[in-house]
Amino acid sequence: MANHKATKKDTRQAAKRRDSNRYYGKTTRNAIRDLKTVTDGTGFSEKLPSVASMIDKLAKRGIIHKNKAANLKSKLAKKANALVAVA
Image (tube, rainbow, N blue to C red):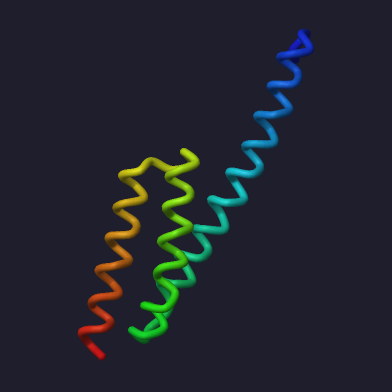
């Protein structure tokens, strides 16, 4: 355990950030999972912007890498286009 006041504070701050990052990451993963279960094109297209926004915020905060965010959004956009083409 840390012995200096500043190091103890840094440990507390890191724990707080970790909890926050875990919450936002898990919330976004759940939103992506729920979006993937949607089978109609219009419902998917309506929810896609909000999920893409969540993914962008994770990348901006540094919780996920910007390329991972781009890959996730690309896969979701592909699925949206496929669902719209079928309908």
